Length: 218
Ligand SMILES: C[S@@+](CC[C@H](N)C(=O)[O-])C[C@H]1O[C@@H](n2cnc3c(N)ncnc32)[C@H](O)[C@@H]1O
Image 1 (cartoon, rainbow, N blue to C red):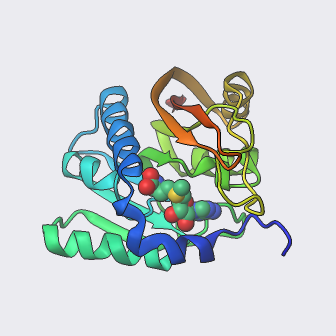
Image 2 (tube, rainbow, N blue to C red):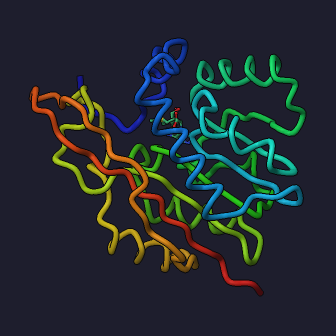
């Protein structure tokens, strides 16, 4: 089978067991804490999470916000999140099955956000520059983007060699792409390190960064 950037089927298959992985829960909690510390979410902010999965990050951040739109391309991931929302009674989270890597995407056209964040999603999106520009267009003037993802890795982090992903990101190159999208980097920090046996059977360290960047106030 040919390598593909479209991993929706894989995430649909994994959704019901996604939260059972303790390392996934741990990284999501670290990401949520780091986003909260770096962006000071508050009750007047409308936020967007891109690639929310089962909502491991957003269930921590949503109570601090006015509203949250959680989008993902996997309906099964969203179904798990919708059940969490139902059980918790949180009224300020909406979900949407939306592909943010498509330039034809229209579901969000009329919307603007003070905060946009993602966790471990950027490496699944082929056109990083186009994606960052789309996020910038969705931000209000003065809005903040916060992206958590892998630093440059050896290409062995993902178990499936056919899964098409970026092998992490070089911080200087990512800062330049953010800048080109009209987003000024305000912080870049290491917030977590995966220690995992990679698909070559070697125990390796994979650091995760959080970058925050701000759109100019007009
Ligand atoms: C590695 S998972 C991370 C999920 C969640 N953020 C977490 O930390 O548990 C990446 C998620 O991004 C979603 N995704 C991938 N490409 C996407 C796109 N173009 N637009 C929206 N979601 C996307 C996948 O369906 C998946 O749920």
